[in-house]
Length: 365
Image 1: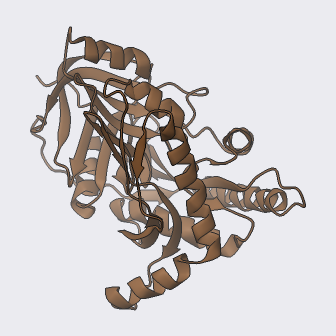
Image 2: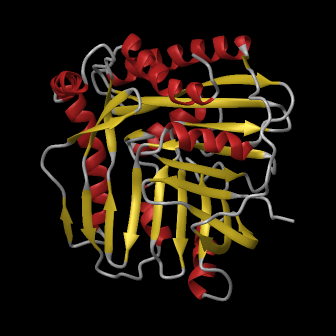
């Protein structure tokens, strides 16, 4: 008899899973203190919500494994997914209204906002049973170069968050921190050879609008780290980063901690939610997101692990879906950064391209 699988990471850095029995936590500080005390387990892993004031974490303490065990399963037919047309139409209408309202604030004479990330959802129904691990396997098969993630919700067994993250939020190894924040996105042009499309994307992204959006993010991360790190190393200009269907601007940041034993919880509190998923200023953006959007829960949050040495690896919970096996539905969610020069049609096209990442997993053209 196998314990249920509660957490998985897969991709370029190799697989990470948990062996149990597992001890469960809602609070990152308590979970980190437990694993670092060394009384049980050597890793705590799971998901942290977008807004920790509105939702709780799903964290599991156990033993790290790079060969996650799985019960043998007989392959069955791939289910067909049907769009919840009424929900999706309403979600699009709300999204467009939210962008319109945000642009009015961003373009005001004395703007309250400089940037805000606005998201939208799509929902799909299915009949029968969907194996959540088979769905996760499909994600890892389609996106081997991403960091694929899988977490079962602690308070709602049978509800799963999974996806293929394009963004490393924070990795810690001893006193060394690394991250690659992403902000600034354009669609790929599949009609062009990759080299030509790369040059086209570079010409579009190295524009004042996108560079300013990206600078907000880098400045926020650097300011947040400065209290912990005397030395930060990052390039003056961002790099072009590839992702399925998209190009991004990214800046690799390396920093060295003054104190290698600083709690990861303190670093997360200083850096999350970043302008990559929230906005500038943070407090005003969080309030508007809470007022305008359905609760984000783990979308735009973090997924990853902390070990008994205090090292960690966390990725942004993006390009993903939520599977609810009780309601027999899946919800896809994605968003994009809106600034004063944003256009509604371009923002909508960007979210459609991001949603296509998980539509492909479901077999939806």
